[in-house]
Length: 152
Image (cartoon, rainbow, N blue to C red):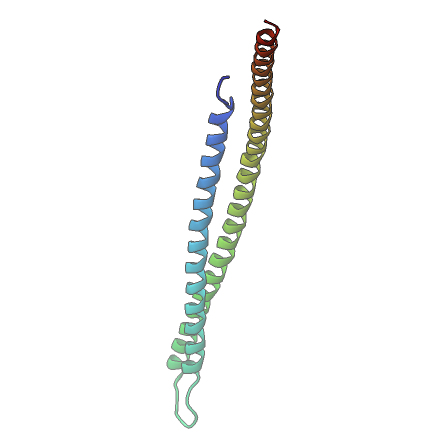
């Protein structure tokens, strides 16, 4: 009996490779997302520090230029935080898209895996039936020989 050959093996292997690539891309996107989250936390700390240090101390005289410089600094770090927030949101979108690509690749590979398993099971059943038929023939031949030898 011929060994089992799945005719779509090259397609299945390609789908498996596509799934592995999607897994790697998702892992990269998750690493980038964590980096963006770290950047946002750092930007938030800078804003908090800027707000804490921008307020003039009580009892000290502050001129308009100092107030304007402090305000400009607070606005700059708030823009940085806003940019970090936008970067994190964009990366969250990339992570979601990566998850969808991985799910799709997994489904496509799984369809071929199920088909392969069904075909393999069919092949194994066919082999078992053929082996059973051969064993039946062997038993019948042995029985006939025994019957023929007893008649003499």
